[in-house]
Image 1 (cartoon, rainbow, N blue to C red):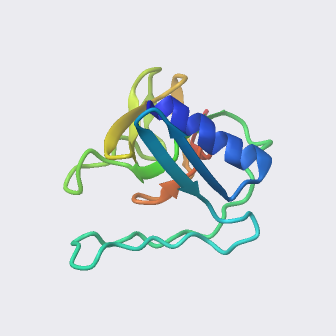
Image 2: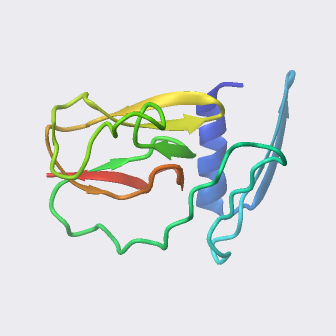
Length: 145
């Protein structure tokens, strides 16, 4: 099963309000579950004995509609990383100048690291998510003016 097929199923769940979906086709079997819209903020749990320390979940931000600039949206559900490694500097910070195609961040989805490029040249006006935060499909990541 390809990642695009899984993204399509996840999008279908959001659009229709489904909270659970099971799919079996050929040798692939997949079960997706999500919280209803009215549920509390998501909780991230690490396996017992794991060195992973989940980042705190931020309170929802005010809407970005009406603010000038171009929004860079998450192309997938995953974990947002501002830098290539914990020891590295972030790819970009507020006030940095970027060109179209420059790497802004990484989103880890199903153990794959996806570099997210700038969709337009400009200045980073806002970073809309925190390092280590779980992001949803279509969620604003950056605002570039």
